Image (cartoon, rainbow, N blue to C red; front, side, top):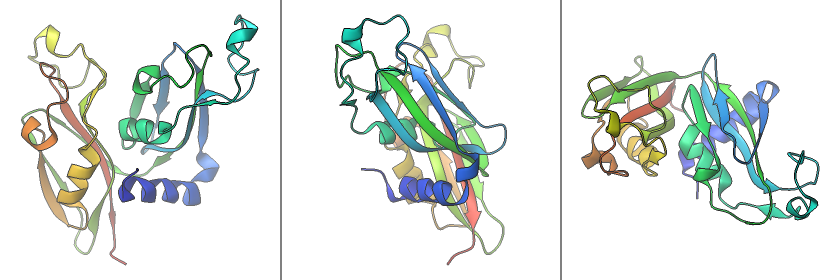
Length: 215
C-alpha cells in the first residue's frame, strides 16, 4: 500500500500539474530515465508488462508479443518509492518481479515535476529541513540507499559504491513520521535510522519536501 504521503503527492500532481505530465516508454533491457530541470519527480502512473502487440515490438518474435494481459502489480509503488522527490531517477526491470517470463515487456511511466526543496545527505551526516514561520513540512519523497555511482563518493573505496540498486523501502515512512507537520526537523542519514538494505555499500539520503500553510 502507498503511504498517505505518496498518495497525496500523486493526487496533487494529477490535479494541479497534469498539463506538464510526461509519459516515457522504455523497452525491457534498457534503462528508464525520469528527470526534472525544475522541481522534483512525482510519479503519476506506472505499467510494467505488455498491453498491446505494437509497443517495443521491433525485431521480436510474435510469441513474445502475444500476451497482452501481462501486468506487474505494485509497479506504481515500486517506482514511486524509488523516484519520487528526485531530480533525476534511472530504473530498469530489476525493481520489478517478472509477471510473465516468456513475454517481452516494457515500462510505461507518466510523471510530472513538482516544485520542492531538494536535499542530499551523505551517510553518517545530518540534514535539516525547515520552513518559514507559519508553514510546515510536507514530504514529497525520500530515498535512502544508492542509485548511482556519482553521489557521495569522495573518499569512498571503489567497491562501496558499485551497487546502484540499493534502497530502503521504509525511507518515506521514517522521514514522514519525524518531520511532517513540523516547521523544522533534523534527520540523520545512518543505517540505525533507515536500516541497512545493502551491507558494504556507502549510502546517502535524498529527499524533497514542500512548505505548506496548515489547513
